[in-house]
Image (cartoon, rainbow over all chains, first blue to last red; front, side, top):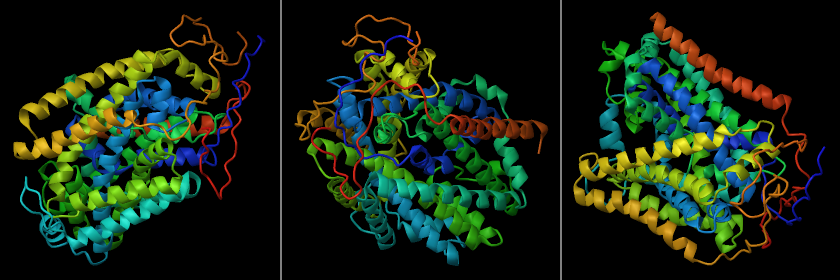
Length: 535
Length: 56
């Protein structure tokens, strides 16, 4: 065996940690499994080739989802910080990329909470089936008291406002309890309960009349669709958005793993766990839609609202109203939405809290309260009113569809193109993990970046030239492009502020010498590296 | 249900859920790397005060 290079100097690092590997895996799955798994995947599959969609979906999982998940885990685990701090350690000018991630999380947290609040209301509505007579009218007129599209109202809706405040209170308490006692406990209890509850829902749905027709509608393949590039882009987009990639969550979560931790093995469990829940949700949702079509004397193709919030809050209530034992089924379904949403929301908010803790030297409780109070006020002002749904729809397009793709491109560019950390991160993963990602990993990440640049350009051109959702241009300029401007401003301005915590005394482990790399980033180095030190 | 739809359903379940089971089995058999480089020990944070110190 060759001489082992000296270990990095002891850093006296004291960082919050997950209690173990299983806790991390459950928390990461809790983050990835969210509302999009339940209401986005089935609709995407149905619209893009049915069963044939699974081919590009699985290709995207292996060639994009897993590689980017490994990249984020590697950055967070090696550079041990919130997104801004980890990215600053990747490249001295890349702190802004981390703040872009934080800003995206801030915006998403504002409206994600509102959706969880709706689900919480519908959990209680399920007991007396308040929505049964007219699900669409109940959701928009009676519950949301929806005002005029393209307007801004400060007329609050009490039945939305009260659960919204309750959800914010719950997540602030969870965040304030810290990683181990708050987020970890929520996921250790919440994820098994969520999976068990959803299994009950799916099994019940499978025994409804028409369920087989619904599943057939989802899985009947249209292989001709595979020739359409948009189907492949939809598959890559689904994997990308579903896995909670590129807005700092996995960087932040991985930074709380102990240094001597396996990274790639748990990453695969998270990736397949997320897709497994997505597939389960697809089967359950379309079995239920098959039942609804059967009851209404039509086909699944004849139903409206097969994706998005309207699937959950209009179409599903219609299913619940029609089926025997609908109260229990409805309560379980909306409880699942609340749980799936909460475990994702805490991960989104932890990205912000962790960044503020490190930048301004705050205690976890201080970070949680700072994030929670500011967010809660803005969330209530924006989404507790009669025009909240329109704002949600608009802000989601710019922060989620545009911002996250930008967050991914800049992260890859900072780490691989400008930071030249590809080999370092690959060898880091190989040194600590049971499975080496291999040289093709860097190629795949670069290829994904090219695809993402195309997706970003296409979406930007589409939003700029065609607008969105029929909203007036002033509305899109203020709340759509205004959101984009906010994300950019945070990314550019936050790095100008001084770090209150000492971030200089940091040594990555394993050291570059231990990874058979020269001290200086970018210097030539041997292509040979044996993580077992037997080269 | 048509044969094609049934085949796609089964193949999807085998690949996705099979991938989850396989990744869990592989991880359970070898949860940690036995050949990590020297060093890398973490300092435990007491539960009663999980504040990160200034020497991050």
